[in-house]
Length: 158
Image (cartoon, rainbow, N blue to C red; front, top):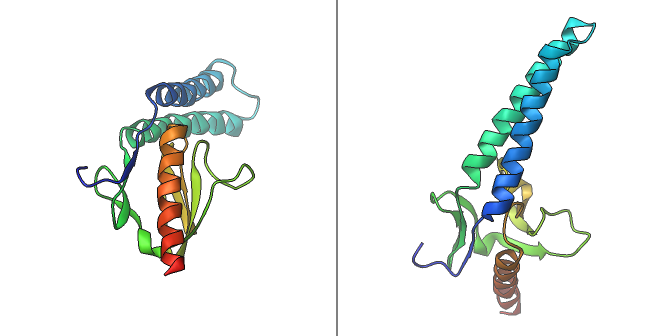
């Protein structure tokens, strides 16, 4: 994106490790469901469904981490143009060690509620909170968090 102030791109190593772990979990649970079936048939069905869900989430993680996040002068969006939030809607940012935030990321608080959404390994949104990070670079996350914090602070001082 040509007019981006800051960008976050998922780390290739974290991306491969995360997807591999989810796929390995899914395949292992499905294998256990077939090779050593539990005495109760419903437990076998549960294991197979759990494995399939792990494989599906792994695939969603693979597709989601192929994208990047960009901060422009007005919005925070991903590389497909999907808008996470407008910068003037952000009321605060949490970056502390004890904040409920993704790994290598930060938590944004917005003034308006938005629909729940999730892009595994990249961001999630619940109500007025948006968590950014996961399989991302810590340096890029810190830079974007600082840029957003400066925008929020300058807006509050006006």
